Length: 343
Ligand code: 5AD
Image (cartoon, rainbow, N blue to C red; front, top):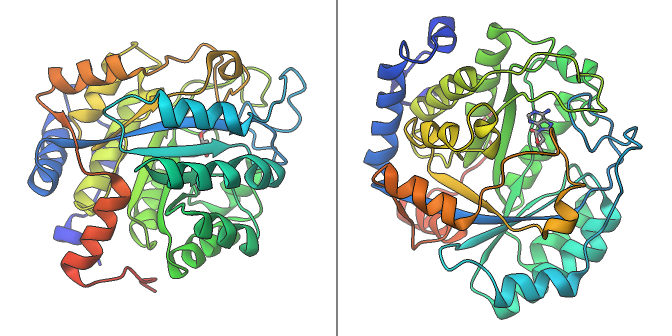
């Protein structure tokens, strides 16, 4: 099913700034019709940068020996999130490299504490894990699982040494959705070795998965990765993908990712909001750990609450008082539909 009959074309993807104003405006309009002026605000903490995977694009890959690896202390993150979190955030995302030990020893007890002591909705982005561990995270009180497929071209996925195979990744997404998680995914625009047809394929692949949201990140070449010398994916390409996703799935939660700021600090983020993004992320990782959590560049632009609120205000938007997890529960009740695997 393609919502609204929208059929994206390579032309939608290739237009640069100025040429795609109309596409972006349509996407923003679709988001405003569904969500009004409200944008979800989620905090992210990076709980571990250990990773057993070796993705060519990612700075946390296991072969990167230049990083100091850490697992955060549960009590320290709990104190930060229970007593010192920004007032506008309704949800938290616990993110890590693919590190089952970190998931079990840091994320799990932290989720229990957060559910006991805060009203925060809990998302996790912890990679492909085994089913008992997914279950334990769910029982602890996490409700949203973010599992990105990165590229929908199976050969490209494998050449990038992304985790397992694309088919396995999609199977995990379907199983998470079938076992009560609200699932979000994501892909990278301008990943070396990919092409425009592949990106359209990624947008369609996402739209056919049982998802509640999807991110698009512009590729950023990271030092100490096999792709270090490759060109950046480009913010325009990522924005065009975001617009296409929004028009395919008007009800999705689509984030303005911080990597949009790589080109011009601050402005890419606002362009994301003008292209129908309806989720922003405040980075709360303690600064001493942050330096070693490198998906792409160590000098990435950090989104603080102040910067986020300023960007929202400048775009005539406002932080949503309703949390993401709450929104998903409500939309299940509203429609009576529990999202199931569309296949
Ligand atoms: N450029 C853009 N996004 C990246 N990610 C990892 N490396 C890069 C990169 N070089 C994204 C991937 C991954 C998420 C945690 O960060 O989508 O799943």
